[in-house]
Image 1 (cartoon, helix red, strand yellow):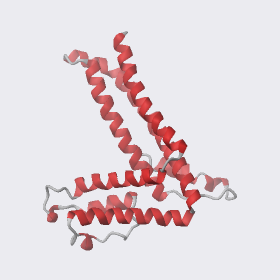
Image 2 (cartoon, helix red, strand yellow; image 1 turned 45 degrees about the vertical axis):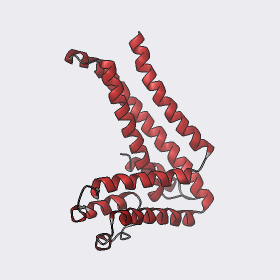
Image 3 (cartoon, rainbow, N blue to C red; image 1 turned 90 degrees about the horizontal axis):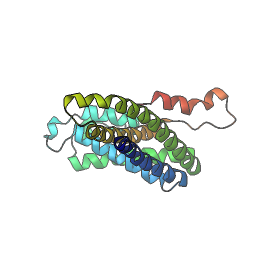
Image 4 (cartoon, helix red, strand yellow; image 1 turned 90 degrees about the vertical axis):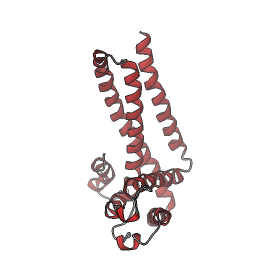
Length: 210
């Protein structure tokens, strides 16, 4: 029984974090700044993956970095590989961040500030909720299978806590990635347009589901 309570405690801690995030979204506190912060984190991850500081510049995978940037925040053609090759690592990071912020501001100008704030709220809530529901399913599966670890002389509760944390961090990364992708790619549909077009945002969200 004590062990069951400890399993529940792990879930409650994770639930608190997610509900805290939802509250911030509902209160609408600096959602644009939050999203731009997510983008900068994604750029940092990209830099570590494709232009790691331990590599010589000629070893950087700039083609892959451009492909990844265009998947999320960069308009196709904005980043030119031959231009990027001339930049230092710090300049490359600044260039990516500048492209991301400019593209975001351009969308805000196109949709209007108020619509963009509303879109941020809708997208963030939908992504957090859908990823949390997926995570709950994965946690159920983990909990069902974890007791089998006892046969390998490993403490199932310790294993559960380690894997639960890893899965939670992966979910948080997936949330950031999907929110960023959607904010640069979904369209805002006017209320008087057809029902079919009104489904555009949810359908794109499904398509972009990681």
